Image (tube, rainbow, N blue to C red; front, top):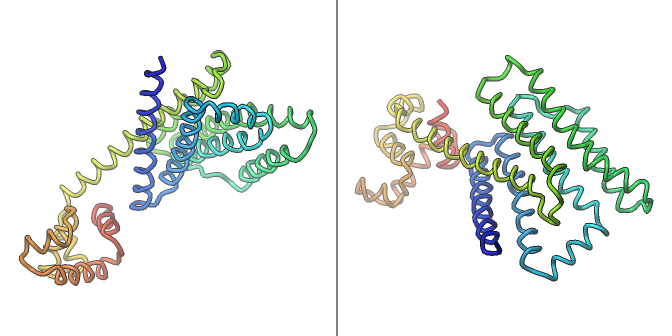
Length: 288
């Protein structure tokens, strides 16, 4: 059992890390709110996985973790709130319904309330905070997501609606399951299952994005792209090689020119297209 748990933790750590860095890279290349929120979500997952590693395999940390859950409950509540906020943002982006100013104030009040719990030495207030932020905020997240889903019917493309509904369904089912499954200490089984499903979904999304970019490059009419940006014949040739992922050295060797010449042409291409990096050039070419 110990070996199986170790193998599972090892594999899920690798998968979550790949997904996190994948969304970071994707957001750098194509800055979008959805990509940034997914990167934040998987960063929080990585933190949670790291804590579980330490609890499972470092006895001293296990005792410290149990003590911290009692003495500094607000930090654990803030961590969970951060994950809930990422969930809300992702569903909102999928359904084209970002967080409004009024809803933002609710999240801010919750944030302040959790912070106050650490300084207010009152058992009733502590119980109230635990009830509100352990249950009410999760119910709010699910209920609000379903309300947005119904309200946005017909206003969002079918693929995004299906993705949002799957996201909501997994979250709601796992939240219900948490009431039925006994507490396993630091490990919350439904939460781990939910994280695994979301991680697999994130990897699939990243793979589809890579496939989409590859197909876009395959169908790219680089002659039209070159003409629309007034590229010379040599610049068009180098631009195509850059889009194919060649380095300056590889381009220089293939065209039998110096690296300095290639760098000069690449700089001129960037200036004409209005980009600053190779990734920006790829995005400009494939987003046409």
